[in-house]
Amino acid sequence: MAYSTASTIITRVLDSLSRSATATTRSGVTMSTLAIAWMNRVLTRISRRHDFKELQKTYSASTIASQKTYGFPSNYKIIVDLKVIDGYESTKLILVLPPNFDKVIPYPEDDTEDKPVWYVPFGLNFELYPIPDTAYTLNTRAVIKPTTITATTDTLDYTDDKDDIIFAGMMTEGFYHLQMYEDALFWEKEFLTRLAEAISVEEHIPDYVPIGKGYSSKIEGGIYIGEYWNQTDVFSNP
Image (tube, rainbow, N blue to C red; front, top):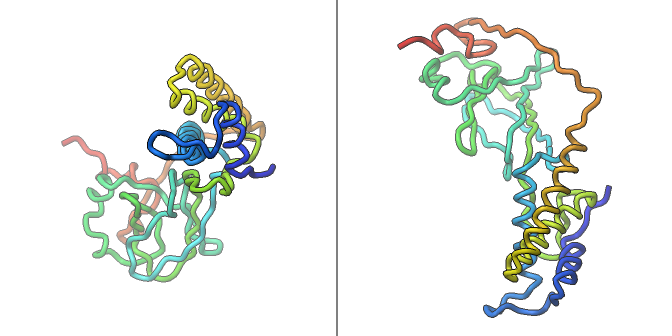
């Protein structure tokens, strides 16, 4: 699959709307600039509907001894998982929500530093527990947001098999701008239909067979290990 430049789709959209790229609105904005804004709105709408593979990324970083807080990848939308790499003892970190973590571990600095087993997301950052005792490789799987298009020469994040979806969405935006609402509704339906078709293709995973498994947790050396929700002091009847 190839990646189209913004101008490829913008030219098609403006031609279909019978508008010149250099024509201006009453405020002096060129149609080409306006079309870039339409494109960014459509890219955001697509991202909200589905996490297409083009925006599924992996990152690698390192922990720092005695440092508790770290930042998520820039422009991230969803964190899929985090793994601490330590040879045969590598492990997938378990997500613990802040209220549950604070109830069980109100002051993590008081516990022994060790290899992290939990991560606690808050805002654009996350905390590791236990606080790392040395440098570990930290691998992250994440879904990012589409890159904002700022010029017609920019390359899209989505492969060209989704150009028809972006085109339909931009036609919707264009006709709404022109206050041609019947045409806008037609293209909105086209946009949603084409998007649903693309999503159905990615959701078809013949080789995936879900397998159920039990949960477990324990305390080793005063440190919680495993699924935090199985600890008796996490959930209790007040």
